[in-house]
Structure formats: C-alpha cells, structure tokens
Length: 388
Ligand code: CAA
Image 1 (cartoon, helix red, strand yellow):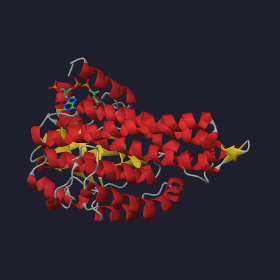
Image 2: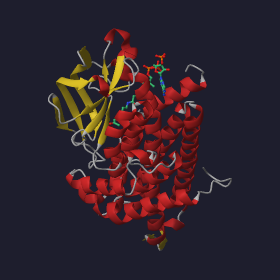
Image 3: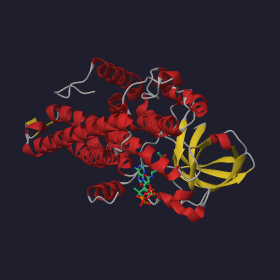
Image 4: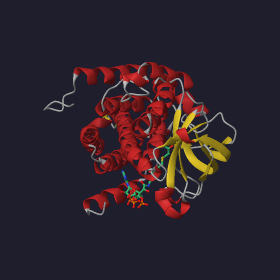
C-alpha cells in the first residue's frame, strides 16, 4: 500500500529495484537485437520467472511472488522501460493467464496450470479475439461441442499474444451460440495435443519479440475438467480478466513513455544548436514540461487502478472504470510522448542507432490491444452514465 505521500514501502522498492536492475543489465542490451530478428526471448523470460516476475501476485504455493498489484505495476514499468516486448509477455502471463486461473479455476487447475507459468518455465496465453470478432468480443464463431467427458473444439482464433510459443492457453469459445455472449465458455487448453495448430506468425510494426499468431482448432478434444468456470460464464471471465490486464498495459505504456522522456531530457542538455543546448529553447522546454506532466498524471491513474484492484480482492467489487481510465490515458500518453521524443532527437530519433524509433513503434500497440482507446472510452462513458 502507498504511504500518505505516495511513498513506497521497502518491499515495493525492492521489487522495483530488482526489476530495474534486471531490465537495465539483461534486457536493455539485447532489446534491439530481438526487435530486429523477431526472435522470442525465451531465456530472459526464464530468468524473469526465477526472479518472481512472471507471477508477481500469484501465491507462493503456486510458484509466485505473492505480492500486491502495486508491486506488479512497479515491476512492469521497469521491464517496459527496457523493452516493451518483454513486458508484453510478462503482462499476459501475470494478469491475463495466471490471474484468470487463480480467480476462476479449481484447486487442481491452479496447481497444474499456474505453477509452471508463474515460475517462467512455460508460457501462458489468452485467446479471445477471432478474425471477425475483435472489439465486439461477444460475436465469436469458434465452437466447443459437448461430447462425453469433454468437448470438441473447432475454429480459428487470431492475434494471440505468445501464440507461436505458449504451452497453455485460456481459450474463449461458444458452447451455445444462440445465447450470444452468454453462450461463451472458457477452457484451459494445452498446445501439444492433436487438433491444435499454430497459424501464421504476424509480422508487426512493434513489439516484434513478442510473438503473435493465429491458432486453429480442428476437432481438438478438451476434458471437462479443463473448463474454466461454468458453461456460459466465459464472457464475464474474459471481461473480468481484461480489467486486470488493462492495468498491466497501462503500466507498460508508462514505462516506455518514461524511457523516451528520460532520453529526451538527456539529449536536450547535451545536443547543441545555434550556440546552446537545445534544452535552452522554449520549444523544447514546453515539450518536456508536457511530457513530464502527462507521465505523472498517468502514474496516478495507474496507482489508483492498482489500489482499486487491491480493494476488490477484499470486497469483490469491480475496478473496470479505474482500469480503463488508466489504460486509455497511459497508452495515449505513451504515443504522444514517444512521438515528441523522436522529434526532440531529430534525425537521431528516426535512426536505429538509438532506441527512440523502437519506443515509438512499440508504444502504438498499447492503444490497440486489450481494448482499443475507443473501447476504453465506451467503457468509461457507460460507467459514468450509469449504463453498466
Ligand atoms: N467485468 C465483469 N463483467 C462485465 C464486464 C467487466 N469488466 N464488462 C461487461 N461485463 C458483463 C456485463 O455486465 C454483461 O453481463 P450480462 O450478460 O449479465 O448483462 C455482459 O458482460 C455483457 O456486457 P456488455 O453488454 O457491456 O457487452 P458488449 O457486447 O456491449 O461489450 C465491451 C462490451 C466493453 C465492448 C467488450 O466487448 C470489450 O471489452 N471489447 C474489447 C475486447 C478486448 O479488449 N479485446 C482484446 C483481447 S486480448 C488481446 O488484445 C490480445 C492478447 O493476446 C492479450
């Protein structure tokens, strides 16, 4: 919990500093290479698992660090400052996959499917989107049909983060299409089973080391004990879990914005033009002032959402509004700040010699995945109008 002056506890400082040291020493030096090649950074992810970063809020009994949401936020910011791709893999593992199974799973499911992911030995994924069902997530076409002691799944999922590499997936699919979103059911599926086909890997603008692909199910059989929650509860599970995920995306957005800002301050002090450091010019000063102000406003919205999620662990309430506001504002801040950072750096901002152009490309996804900015505005508006 935060102190009266928003000061962090010793435990929070420890996780932040651990994540920062690892990010700066082990991730920052390799980030450009993995961006260039699009390779999946499996080894660094394993090391992050050993440090407790792949299951920060997961109880120790399931291999996690058993810390709170603020700890998760602080660590995410630090990892994203070094590389957004690493933080994307971390975010899906922590707040979509592990959180989803811990919240809605049985004891057997938690033991079997959370522990290897929280320790970084395996990779988890979350699969909601389909080619014709993105923002309108309740309209999916894939189906699971009950068959004896299990279900048979057919269909195509798209834009699955870690799809090319993950071992375990939380999958959302229709069991009763006539009930629309109330006919969606969640399952935990294993990749190394017949009928699970990894589709084409997406060539992306940014977060290139975070592998994304389609997943095709062809008569894939899943036992009933792998159903997550009851039949028809899938949409609510998907939405509940996305509330947590959106705090993670907001935090990674803040991380990349901070990285771009800090580089800009350094450059403004050292780069000279017209006989003085460019930071002496009001045009640059005003950019830096607005960058800093937006970053600190985003931080407060993220802390607010983290505290709301912490409260919800005790009172069971929703934190949808807080999570959406944090995600909306932080992701638009990331895009705005990284664009200004490229501008401040001029030609060097556009060059691959420096990481500014990567920050700019990576920031864009935060306005799109886990709910576009338009969807966040819809969620926020429905909340303030009392429509939800
Ligand atoms: N928590 C719990 N329940 C929720 C909820 C939430 N946050 N939001 C909605 N619900 C419930 C509602 O209460 C409602 O319940 P009833 O059936 O009992 O009435 C039900 O869900 C349907 O709600 P809506 O009528 O609001 O549903 P909608 O069809 O209008 O859609 C939406 C709402 C907010 C637009 C939603 O579809 C949405 O968030 N869309 C974006 C999806 C998204 O973020 N996709 C990203 C996928 S993950 C990804 O990016 C890639 C990756 O690999 C990580």
